[in-house]
Length: 166
Image (cartoon, rainbow, N blue to C red; front, side):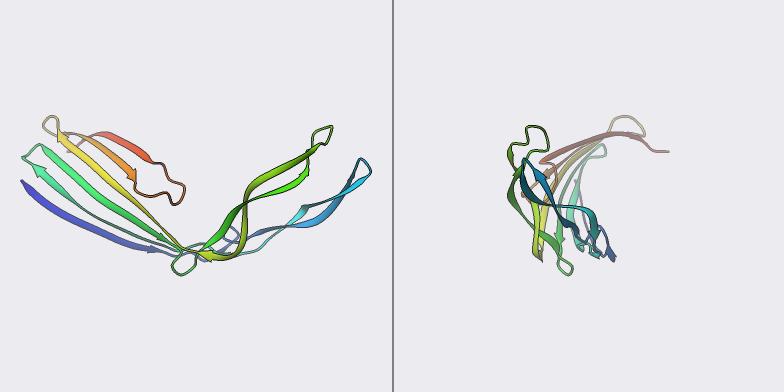
């Protein structure tokens, strides 16, 4: 049995961009059914700000079980926003009117930006198996498993492959 540990670290920085800024609309009004209704509309104004930085790390090992089989285990982490935080958002609702006749009252829900920035961590585990099928043919099976509920990531991501070495 052969034991082979490994690790990796990195830090990603970005400059100011419209992607990190905010989108602000212009206050407008419309008259519907004799009533004046305020809303936010065009023209939209975009501000620039920093995208969040990301500190990435991983640590793991490979266990070679003989000459044909290898088991791989890794823990991966992302710390988002240590220096330039991510925009803080919260869920909110706003009353209004439906844009479809008969223009009844409606409520819109979604994420809205609030003042301030935040940081958060994301953690996943990667578990895999490699087997030498024939002379230079290798089959790979791997699963990425989310260990927390932070960010937009899938709970389980399978990976499989077949490779040939020369």
